[in-house]
Amino acid sequence: MSERLPAMLSAYRLATLAATPLASPLLSYRLRRGKEHPARLCERRGQTQIARPPGALVWVHGASVGELTAAIPLIERIKARGFTLLVTSGTVTSASIARQRLPQGVIHQFIPLDAPGFVSRFLDHWRPSLALFVESDLWPNLILASAARGTPLILINGRLSDRSFRRWQRVPRLIEALLQKFDLCLVRSEEDANRFSELGAPRLSVVGNLKLDVPPLPVDDSRLAELTEAVAARALLAAASTHSGEEEVIVKVHRRLKASFPGLLTIIAPRHPQRGPEIAGLVEAAGLSAALRSTGKLPTAATEVYVCDTVGELGMIYRLAPIVFMGGSLVAHGGQNPIEAIKLGAAILHGPFISNFAEIYAALDGAGGAELVADAAGLIQRAGAWLKNPDERRQVVAMAQKTMEALGGALERTLAAVDPYLLHLRLEHHA
Image (tube, rainbow, N blue to C red; front, side, top):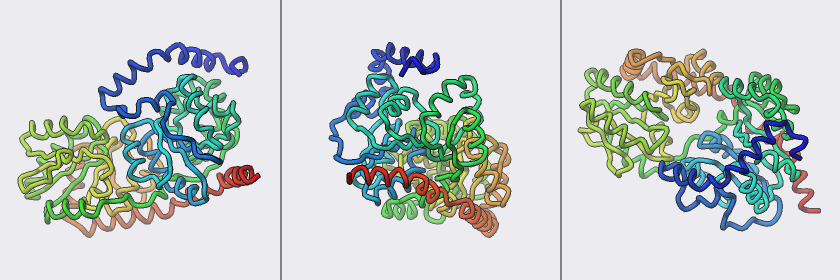
């Protein structure tokens, strides 16, 4: 196999083979930083204590929370057809979401590090019958070894950001060799199709964005009632999935708005919950009172900024806060997904850095279903206007929800494309 590979892929394979002894110090380092699950490090080496179920096994892989969340409705539909599923991801937060939201009986594992020995051990054990890769988390050894074993590979909800596209253009033979291993690439938009085609994907179909078809985020009713009672009738503003550099802006916004809205409570839900104490310290350094949800505290009348440094509670925040600033958009990150907040009735504000969700934000902004704010001043102005005018805010939410409904349908189209493979597995199993 390696003789037919581009030289760069062969070099990558040899380099990852030689670097395998470094896996232990790497995992230890990541563990210290909270990026690995201490009881599940063996999975990163392709090991597991879970037996492979008999029969056909459909494997779904998504890098992190966003990819996993987008795939859950598809996972549910495939499971309803009677198939056993293995779901893999690479982050601690995604594992937490998997535990909370995957259907009963679906197996979750951490994806192995992309070293040949770990990948072989993983594939030897699980022997997947079909592999669905979500978006663009393409690990060379994993893809090549899976294809070499005859496992059909399908890319679902395929997307390529500007940054990823430019990066892959620097190694055209490498990415073409990987994409050629896929039986089918189901992509989100015509722009994604053009990019994948230019990189060498041979079989493409535009089916839309699975994230538009996700159901509303779940919520623990008792916790929602508890927090609702704690905030009473206070004016609320939320900043969701924020990144470093954005919390300072949110603090500035709160300090300006609280003069016009006495009792204002700002909720910050950082993209990386482990940053909670850091953010609380930033808030208090600015002369505001903060409370951390991870400590079990509810906001009191004295709390000005409530830091929700927990996993799986955005559904509660979106139900509670009438206005949500979507993070990752005032810094050069590429933005975060606004769809879940919109489905739960929040009016959306966002910054200019939204390349990861450019089409969605373009549709929303064009329809008056969200608003772009360039900086703290813009955020103060628009959030203040919506806090004063609930009717205007509700109109924005209505336009956003109408826009999302018009853009939906990717789940059914994706399932229709995958169905022939599932039918083949069923027939093969019965035979």
